[in-house]
Structure formats: C-alpha cells, structure tokens
Length: 147
Figure 1 (cartoon, rainbow, N blue to C red):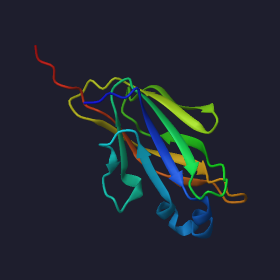
Figure 2: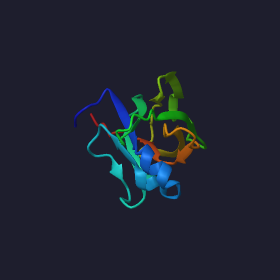
Figure 3: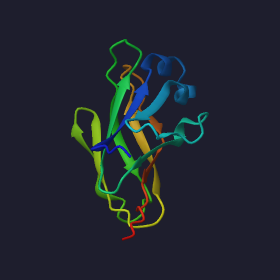
C-alpha cells in the first residue's frame, strides 16, 4: 500500500453555478483527495464523500473555484460534533490562507472510526451567503499484527 504523508482533501466549487442555482448547491461541489481508494459511498449523494486516514496522519482541506472567473473560495469553518474520543491529536484549525489542517488520533480499535463534519465555505462570489456541506472522515482500523 502506498503511504501518503498527509491526506489532502480538495473541495472544488463552481462559484458562478452556485450563484445561479443555490438551491442545488451539491450539483456544483465536488470532493477529491490524494488517495485513489477514497470516493463517494453513493455517487448520487455528494455528502457521502469518505476520506480515510491512518492513525496519527495529517489531514488538510483546501477549496478552489473551477469557474475560471477568478473567485477566491475560502473555507471559513470546519466543525466536528460527537467524534469518538481520541479522534484527533490536533483538531482542525485554520493556519491561514483558506486551508485547514488536523492531525488524526491513534485508532486502537479493530474497526474504522468515523465522524460526519460540517465545512462552511465562501464561494468567492461577492454578495453570496456562506454555504455548508457535510462529508465524512474516518481513521483506518488498526492492522492486525501477529508475530
């Protein structure tokens, strides 16, 4: 299995289309990350994007506008509620520049630990409200190691 130094989650938005069609926000938002195995649990439901990190791995979130109109999309908040104890070594924070960072905790269980969370973002389209989306993040289960 290829190792990644961090899980880099990218939220791609089309600010122009969101502005024209705010009632169908998720039609104009896509998630991806740098792990080919991560994907939507249900391709018809954008809230089911599922990133899976290893214990103690760094996770970063970035956002970008794909409309090519020069909008500066920014993540304004990331909030996790009701996460399992020890889910984070360092909870998500904004180091500046619109990206967010967290360090995952140490999963000592025999199953993945999962948590839904909320990303609030500004599409960059002047005068539009902040938008909210709810994906999922997991910490991979402990690998069985037998000597």
